Length: 291
Image 1 (cartoon, one colour):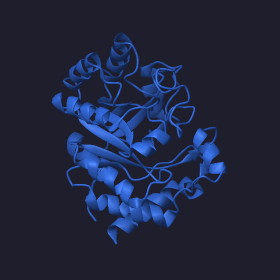
Image 2: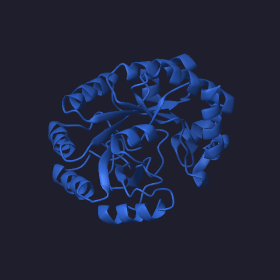
Image 3: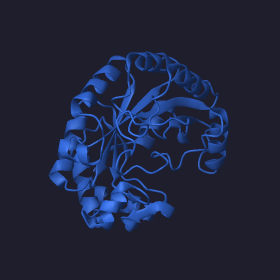
Image 4: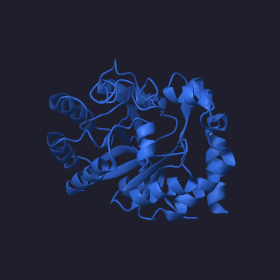
């Protein structure tokens, strides 16, 4: 089963392998600072989904240099994407955003920016800044949607409704940035059909890329409490392979699949434990898709 992988897209776009460097700009989130809630999304770790990012104590330039050292054995081209990953990366004063983003985009080894954020954190001044940056080097905006189903959205404490996502996509399309949407597979009480409905909706909304993320239960999250209380079960390996296969079947070939799974930090992983062996999981997914 053919699909457009991120690796292939990056080679097509930049002419060679490009590696993402995960950065932490030290931002917070409206779901943590009391604007919407103080607890964060139910699944979110204390690192705000940036558990593999560099330390926010370092400058952006220092983080880029540290990240380059970490992946030096995996890449020869010397081309990188600066990935602002931890927490909500458009949720800060505009001058702060401008300073951080410009420091990254003007680095000689950075060929593009990737900014992870929430659809409800894209005011006009931020959209104008992103538009400005996108004229310098390509910008990817990654939106954490997770699901289109309101019951699930309430359960995970997402904090915004689906129409907010729709508006964000419309506004981002106007400025021509590359839109990538995160979807979580295996949310409690969602059926396979529910998950496929989310994928179908997202693909029809005008996006450029999608990330399919396995639900992880991590230590010290509210999701862990519900899992320990046996309120839900995580997906089995074979179930996940089946769901992924069905997702890929309905994703148009022009939409880039940035991720087919995901791995939480092993020291914090509660379930599903099979996901800790990332190489085995990726190999099994590729085999399932080629059968």
